[in-house]
Figure 1: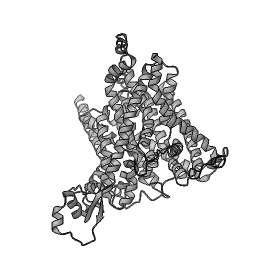
Figure 2 (figure 1 turned 180 degrees about the horizontal axis):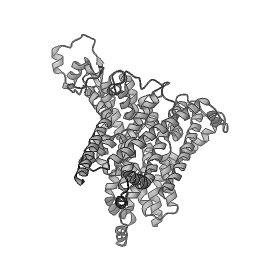
Figure 3 (figure 1 turned 180 degrees about the vertical axis):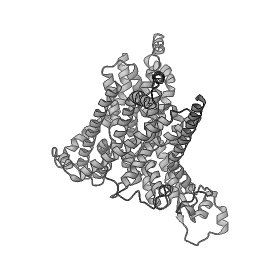
Figure 4 (figure 1 turned 90 degrees about the vertical axis):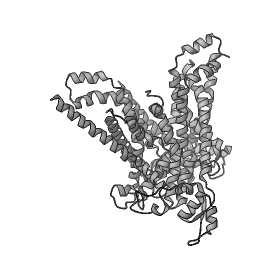
Length: 315
Length: 287
């Protein structure tokens, strides 16, 4: 009897595991699809039903990184020219009969994203750690009310503040500047950073700090030499979260950056209109942009739950 | 320097930043919502902006077109959040089972959640494309247009939203399920309680606070959805009439800045009201 039950249970277990794996694979199909398309050779891209198996090529990636002019149909460049081409130039020439003119817009936009995101993350972490420490250890009046106030600024729909921010940026000439977006993303992320880091600092026993103060450390030395090193993991996790949030931000970037400081999320949807039917390049751009956030998510997986609930759930 | 003063200095930069980039705009927006103002025109006090009281609010709330937008947004919130809650919780229940590679599966499943919503929108736009995308092909459908057709494109955004945010509910549910004390199940086991009894009398009550939390987060986010539809349909005439997109069009396409501000305030009041009601239920569930 017990044996039969045991067998039944084992079969059930195998079925559930199989089911989970199938769900996971189905779940990732849209992502596979984008990666798959980004490596498709030009001649298969517009084919329907879609071709599943082919020899992968990086031509789409070269197209999204470059600006090209198409050669007139039927025109062949002299053999000598072709042999002098760099490998990627030859690849594009053979794939779509185009000549690479210059670097495209993507590298610049990617650099903008990196500047804005790193700038805002660094400032967020510096002022956020200070504030989190102040809230954690300082016995200040109305502390909980201030913490709640900070939280509400994050819950605010961006659409409500976007109009006055637009007007403010126009008056201060911050539109389409890196510093403008950095300020905005810092304000957007600092509430999150204070909440999550306060949780991490609360977990550090206060005795170390008290002992150090008795030994004659100043408050600031205590903060720099004892608290920051002990909260390092938490600070790092928070920084990665801020990085991801800023990297992904669209609404403000779309409205407040047009060209000079434009980030990738603001640029890519527009670019897809320009690319017309070059779905390969569109897919390549999408994947290149998603990759950093995916890598960081994998690094963060242990802290994910804490981050998405603002430190409400610690596990 | 006194210790307390120093602690205040620690907090100061954060508060200054939040007040200047969040509170100040909020007050400004409130002022604009009671005036007639267009950011496209020259500022002349008394004319642009001109104080007109609650006329903007009256205009918005009496416009039947606006009600279509409120209802569409409500439909969007209900469909996507319901889908996320059911699928996310269901996945979390399946993942209660321990097996090798569970960590990997969980990590793969949460990937969509930390992607940029607008880029996820673009990805689904490619995926849905009737001419060469794989969505119709894989489901064996004909060349159905999921992006331009107004009868359908709200659902295509809902599907993408569910895809993106189901992992969020799943992750929270997993944390909740892991925190249910084991001895409760053991006690029920001794009483030979049925699976359903254990689920409805132990599991559900124990994790309802965390499910409420997930619900609150998701409803607020879905209500103000902007990025995802911008990626999939754009803000053109064929796009579904969602509130945040409409607010963008009013404020920055037709440059009716003050109407935009009023609509923003109506949305803010709605978000706060929904949150307060849900938090009340959350506190009840906690007891």
